[in-house]
Amino acid sequence: MSMESDVRVIVADIMHHQVFTIGKNETVADAIALMQLENVRTLIIKPEDQYDSYGIITVRDVVYQVIARRISPAIVKVSEIMRSPCIMMYPDLDIYEAAQRLAAGGIQRAPVIGFSDYGDDKLLGIISLSDIVMKLELNALTGEGLVAV
Image (cartoon, rainbow, N blue to C red):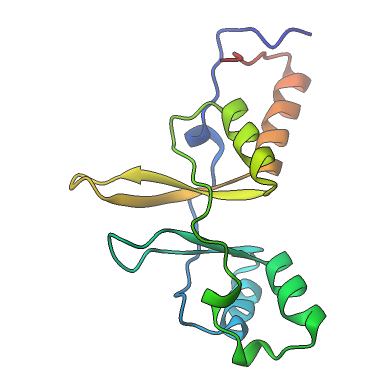
């Protein structure tokens, strides 16, 4: 089956708009509580100023860097285990390019960033490898092709 068609799927088409954020100075215990409350596996850390960058913390980070080492999440700051700067995606990016960026970075999720009317970064959503696979799977089942750019 060819991937060529007149359908071009971009990040904006499949990203999740609801994103949960946490401050870098919060504790990992706070991050765990928020993840449990909202039933999510990833939190985004917004930049504190124009010189700062976005960060990301996942359940995997918490387990590998805190829990598995028998460190109390209450004494570890998010900034100590978050990945920053993190790979970012843009809403108009083709999903194949997004998949390549995620694969190259060895990551599963990334924030989607746009620009506000004032020219500064704006957090729009989050995209995951699962989102991309589900879209490709759905298109395969429905017979729709995707444009490989």
